[in-house]
Picture 1 (cartoon, rainbow over the protein chains, first blue to last red):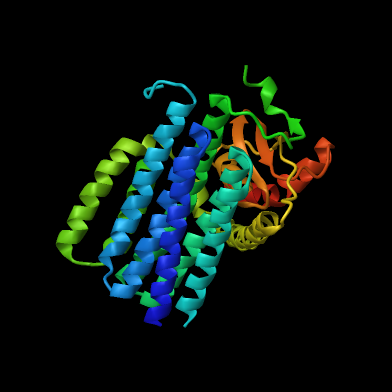
Picture 2: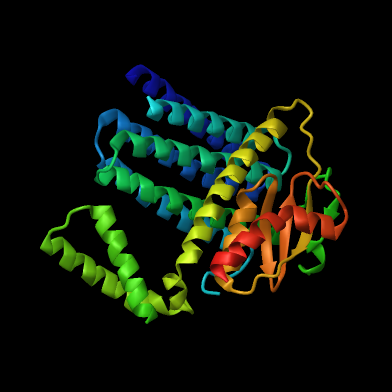
Length: 88
Length: 105
Length: 161
């Protein structure tokens, strides 16, 4: 069971590397931002799998905090994309 | 056992989402494939965590992470696709219809 | 009235997150909930009495079941389009009219559209939803309005209007 979890964890990390490919190679700026958004969601899955593997529940707190921070970051980037000031 | 099955399904959905993120041709289609598959995949992984911990504090934390993840991911997708349109990204060359053009000057 | 509703919801959320029913934890939670409700409650819940009508919870459960099924279908749809060697996509942005009135119901409908097969909401202006569709199946407004919103609108109208 632990071996299978390790394999799944490495698969998930490989998927984050795929997102990094999109961030680096993206032809336009919105492409890179999509990559950042998806990367933020994938990290939550990594946190959940690590929390099962080590039997420590505080890692789930890190996951929830990461969701909210990545959400605020994406909203800020989207506001920048649509060309408005941040206080509008 | 059910934990392992749910996590396997979640990772499989995440793989579909990332293949879509790499293969599809323009921003809108990429965002569509990736946000759907990756959100449901991570929700499935968190559901596996809920079944693993049962009715304890960690179980409830994981259960509450699911709606937070759902709403934040969908609202972020709206904001991102709207920002991309206002930024001036064209729809891909396979597109057939654009009703939003008249509203945005 | 709406301050009390937000206070109770925030307190329940705090207690389930921390999961310890001791007196200091309860005092800290009610302080945090008080601050939250004092700042943010004016944006929520224009009609609190909807919480006290039990048939809304029943329709919410029906909607949740239906929505989960649509989510799973959406995933297999995306998997088919992504793994197919020629990628059968025909994207476009269509305008869809809705009959829902309240802001909360419109937000919920937009989120549902985002998670269902092949569609994502771009913008909401008044009653019009602008929806990006990965495979535009018909050109007739009546047909695609029924295909995109018709399934969810009738459930959302029952519990959120």
